[in-house]
Length: 532
Image (cartoon, rainbow, N blue to C red; front, side, top):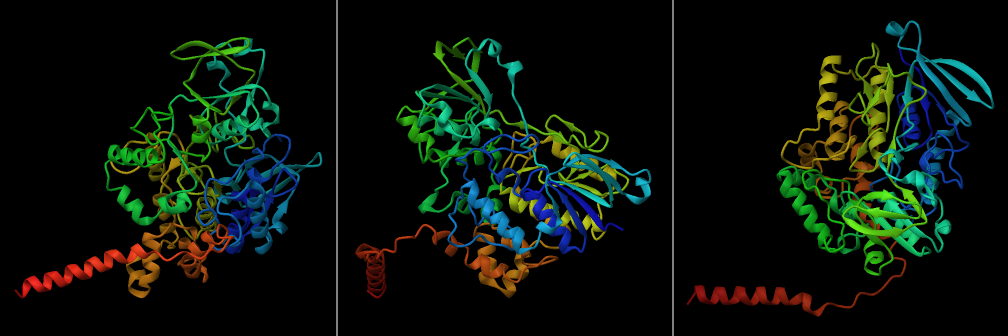
């Protein structure tokens, strides 16, 4: 029987795994290589080996109501999109609230995780760790790997002709911390994801010139959406997800493009995505269009070749003088402490059932948490993953047969389009609403909208038509939270609170009564005509 669980990493995934283990009566021990919790959200002025790295200006891409733990809302006065320091503050509040720090061993590196000799019957693991130069070995009944996928930078030097002749400076975006190094320089950022766009905007404030190179383009979305509300709260609901899945994929992609173009014409700005077959993750940046229209950032195609002091772009014969090149080209991932026979990574994918469990192990006692790129926040996604995984580890939920799991894994890897709904082009991308409901159904925690409508119609209406906030995942089943209903009903109050710091008296809108007046007059005319 599983009791002692080793958890690798004390970032978001590790913290929620600790809490899930405690909720199920397990005994977690978390090994964290740094001196504090937070993982990615723990900012340092230098890059640490084996740890994710972020830059000073990072702000969350998911709003606080959409990215909180499901039974622990953000304080109402926290901003909707949080600088990294405020998000780390929230993680520490969460860890203290649920007494998670007692389970963490800091400054401890996991060197190796291997099966015990009797694994086929016991399912146990030997975990070798190192603390202050001293190695120790311990036996655990299960292991949860929570190391993420943002530690190994992908630097495509082999496919960047001439980079070895470049006399300027080049580095991966992982090494970027502050824009000071760009002062009065000519900067090229390669890669138009969220990091690349952020760095280009940062650089535009101090650099002499900034170029942003993109191969396929991207839709750019503002964090501030319709009527000033957070974009993800407006765009993500059960109703909208149901509606989206009814549309043919090409029509849906066209509608998404039309909405993005309602802010500014992406074709005129050189940003429109080349492929409309797949949906590439949109870029969240409210400043990029302003930088482009003022000439502070110039959008360029992919790089043809790099020369000593300049760059030539495809289909553009002119050379662009460049001093610094930043490769915002993403990450690969690996598990250096695991043998390939346990988890093998190929083509940026791992063979994991529901992105969590290896299908071939004799005993399901190893789980990978957080190796997914959902359309929702990774916080609520990893929380649901950990809740299901701990129940599997404990034996309360069973996995399908290895054959059925392999079939599911191969189906996800094949990524065949159904013809309807969202269809993504990159590994690990997943429609969070569908994925999380599937995991919740395994533990009987998926909200039943029909029964909810019969007993609480107001809540059912909010759950279906309102934002798909994490509180919905605590309405029923194991881990049910009594405060979930109230959290859902008050989520918009917490959204408006931090923006309404100046209370204003709204002037009366005289013209708002006109439609009612005209409707009443029309009714009188209709009655008059009927009785003529």
